[in-house]
Length: 198
Image (cartoon, rainbow, N blue to C red):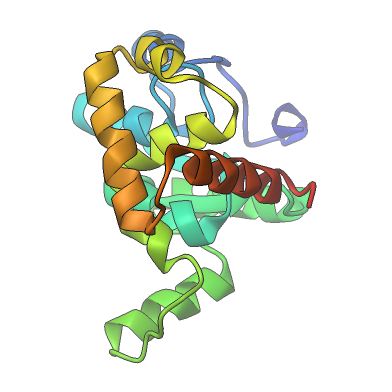
């Protein structure tokens, strides 16, 4: 769809963070469209790497994951915009062009939420428990929700089993969950809600 636009072109596609960084080095794009869900390091980690290595490349996140949980994290990591994949094509093209012009693009609902926080009128949102998780803890939580075991997560993220177990304990504490079984059920439920299958 992007290739059909007269002023835009696609210079590469990658399925993981390593491939994306290699393509950026080779192609020197003006903008990178990044998803949160990637094999290996997730999109948040990729955004941080792009920001450090290629600060001139603008990043727009295009993801199925709820902006209430991920948009602020993505912006803090260095993204210039966040868009849900459920948005119509016109909105995607508008967001790409706005980010290319140096602007920041988020939904009206998310912008309103941020403004309420700035003026001190923010109220405890349903996602506030998730907001307490660090980026890495959220990545581990999402992997648990996808049915991955501790060893599998450790291998995927290039971390030790002990580190993943520590993250799991921190997640349980921050979310007020008593057991690993409760954590698994909550993570699976969150994954189902995120995919829109509820």
